[in-house]
Amino acid sequence: MLWTIFIILLVLWALGLATGATLNGFIHILLVIAIVVVLLRVIQGRRIA
Image (cartoon, rainbow, N blue to C red; front, side):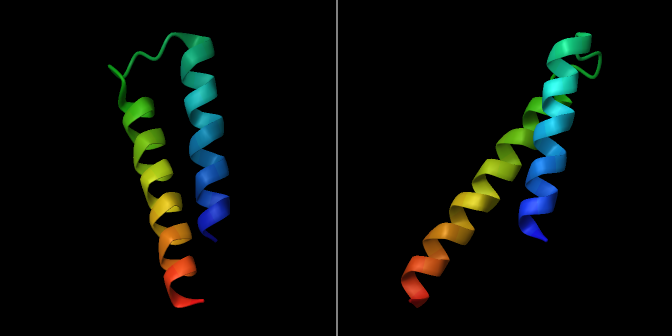
């Protein structure tokens, strides 16, 4: 589920770059949030294992 959200946000970010991102960087903020969530998931996974 988390990877699906990450991929969707990554695609939206790429589309934002290609089309000129009229939302004043909103897509980039979503990408940063997605990366932080993935990093937290990896860190928590290592801590549990």
